[in-house]
Length: 223
Image (cartoon, rainbow, N blue to C red; front, side, top):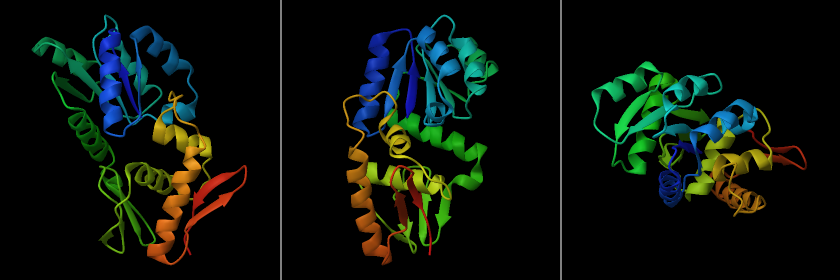
């Protein structure tokens, strides 16, 4: 999920709409709401955030350090007007990157992925058995061959592999894939996506590596 912070509702709504078209969940806050949320949100909600996008606001310079107390996710500041002083101020306050409008949401996602690779270069991909999943949006691979998936199924596989060795609930998967503020999608849709993913894994691998337990959740295992 991408969290967008800007004092202008038109801006937050615009970005969340654009990210939605890319299949990426997002949520928009004004700075005051965000300050309260980031201090009080559950760890699982904070962990669902892939990047923070900081826009206009009188107190936004303090937000990168507030975020850093709760999350290691990339913090990207968006500057409306070219200004060296503003750019340097955002970097001094802890932002990982500063971009100028207009900027396409795919570029924001690419920059966030690049920041994560620099911070954790060993996490560019994760291998579990015959499956390799990437952190930059590429299709996963099985036995070195591409394993194309619809974006929701791909993100579920990425989430399961990232949490290999422990169970994750349907609610946790839903939050990671759709965002914690999406009231327009029923949580049960996760079951449909997982069912389709497991069928495809079984066809390619010859077995189903996803173990499920009622009330406990899902875990990816290996033979």
